[in-house]
Length: 462
Image (cartoon, rainbow, N blue to C red):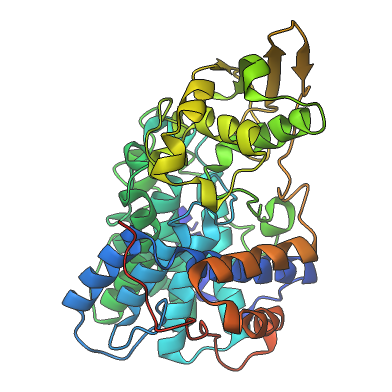
């Protein structure tokens, strides 16, 4: 009888032999497209400049991996650290499995895949190995990670990216088990750091730790081969309620692909995904009705408890805090009729009209649960009461636009990609890169970012 760790390790060790169904291929391709987009858009974020300087200072000058801009002399772990931080810096990256899968998986695969000279097809299967590992683990814990203080992108992403990197490196089942055991001791990231520069570092560190774990195992490092099911192991430690399923087998991995049913949700707004349904509803209510801030008496929003925990900044004062503020995003939507990168700056957040409208937002917590994404309530709802007594009501909102169940069109995905490229200073080569990513499975070598427009990397934003 095999154990949970052995089941997952065996799946990962044989993942390069998987047949990838067309629907899964489309989803994975979109994950790469969206991550390249957000890496480009986030390249000049202050957190990325800090991480880049740190990585350069530590680099041993080994063979380059894949890092934003044109960094040379960085090993693959350092490159993944930079790219993962850049991809997550603007909170514009895709969502699934209670976290952000692609923002960890893609940077790790690109960095290590370039070192190994992997093909696009190998990268796609590595992504599938990582996604399915993440899906298997998150399904075993009924209590939302965010409510306990854990950031799933960090704690689950480290394990998933380790599976992806192990797959690329062709590790045996025993080596995969030890890589997962080692990665489990590296996995960490706290919700308390949402709205700070540390939050995007969670993704970069998860991608880098995955590469380090695999490389250490290849050099002979040992680790627990029962780390997932052990009563003092990974799942037990992350589940203070003791409700994680550590015993049932994972023998259907690779046979029933969760990516086919759970997919990826592509963000339309560069803020915490927990607010996206409410933003959609608010914009729909205000559209064409002449709802100006001066006419609004109150804004009441129905969300779930885990969403409430993620949207922790009720009185945001900075652009970073605003990404995790339900009050800000709804005030922003009503004042400028959009929530975009241009609005996420300290000056806009501090505007008197924005702060005043934020004060009229009231939260109502409902204890329902979405069966697909348990971190969300079954429905969100927005009610706006006007000074003249008129009440506007969205009714129940099931999915945000861009959700895997309400996907963006190919044109909308391309539009986001081009906007992100322009924001990051890569407009000149964006079309070529996009076309290349559309045929990822056919590529003999993994794609790189184009040279940035102008004179290279910009200075960090003050």
